[in-house]
Length: 218
Image 1 (cartoon, rainbow, N blue to C red):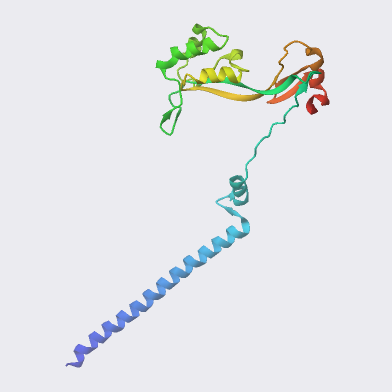
Image 2: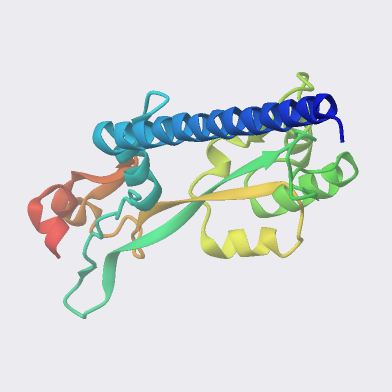
């Protein structure tokens, strides 16, 4: 074979080896740079505990720690016959969701227009409010109203009344529980026992035994 023909083949082979060599070096350096950047970023996060301006320590605390308010329980006050004359109880405040945007997991959480008359009847039968007034509240002029309340008649609702309203399974009628104080004897001995009312979401004694430290410990 002619030596002149062998030379181009050899040159091509050398060129290919040269290209492969530098291509391999290029890949190596790219991987090395990525690795260095990754290690640098990891070290930065490990030392500074921040990423994109977010404090990872605070985020972790928020993820695994929760704050729960435990309401203090006021003691029950008994008379000489060991009958309770003042004790803790739970009352409820009612509100009605009207906005059609109130949908959770595909389930409607609002009171449909078709159920408003029935809801007005149920609420007027169980609360000290007229059917006409309830219907008026359930149809506000502002059509973007999210929810409505019934004023004072919709507060301090007993568990028994709540259960009666719940038994009709009317979607959109919701209740918010709150701690309250029950006086089974009503006005009898009220000056001695006193009274505790809700103030800033806490039960506060405003007169009688309820106002004294004794009222908290009984």
